[in-house]
Amino acid sequence: MESLKPKIAIIGSGNVGSTFAFSLMISGLAREIVLVDKNELLAKGECMDLNHGASLAHPTKIYAAGFEGCEDADIVVITAGANQKAGQSRTDLTKANVAIFKDIIPAISKHAGNAILLVVTNPVDILTYVTLRLSGLPANRVIGSGTVLDTARLKYMISEYCKVDPSNIHTYIIGEHGDTELPVWSNATIGGMAIETYCADYAGHGNAKNDLAEIFVKVKNAAYKIIQAKGATNYSIALALVKITRSILRNENSILPVSTLVTNYCGISDVCISIPSIVNMKGVEQYLKLDLSDQEQELFKHSATTLKNIIKTIEL
Image 1: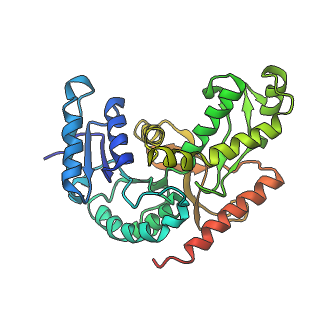
Image 2 (image 1 turned 90 degrees about the horizontal axis):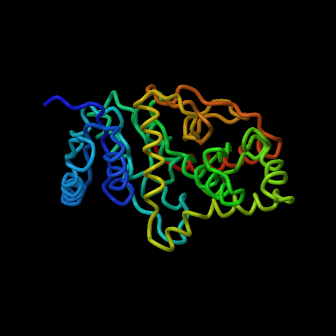
């Protein structure tokens, strides 16, 4: 049977995969959504629940399948893997999830050779690199969700601090999606003004530098707080995935801090790491070389080196 287009395959029907499927359904972006999970009953149950709302949403074919369901998919979104537990860092997950990816990436590649692969499972930068190497796909077609969510969290918390719409805040978190990530304060603006200037002149915060540093610490630790409170993060990452998916399917050329393979970025090569990138129907069209401060360059190099040291321990 011929697939409906656009078609999205979601690997993993847990909290993130199922919430993304729901978000994708109500966005109207996809005409066909297939859920693939080793727990076939779970995948079928999620599809049944989603399909019962078909008359209340956009027309979408939703079903569960094995990896053959990835055939003709435009994007394969990979959320499968061991969950991050309370008190566990993202890098602690590496060994278990690399083993899982060694099984699922060849199975995906067998059926979805023309798709763009979007990796969500943590540690996302490591697993994006693993996916790139195992799939043999060109680097532009293997993307990690990266720090898109971290950046959204930062914009939200600054918006609360400054009482301004988060969409008017222009800033990025780059580096590892994890403990070594960093905010690019040197490029941050609100309404075209340097962020500290805006905070002082229009938000009544004369000493914004220290406050912004505290806000970033809260952003970096946000996932741990949420996991401690409710066991998993799912809503905001699902919305981040919809944003990335929309940029690909609609060829939007959105600039998003996704995880992508870099070459000679601040002297760093052969690692997947988050930097602002132009995302469109080709995947990552190109990444942007930001004018980072000396301190930001050092922090970025530290983040990349941390990832590279983990990659060295992996047998591919």
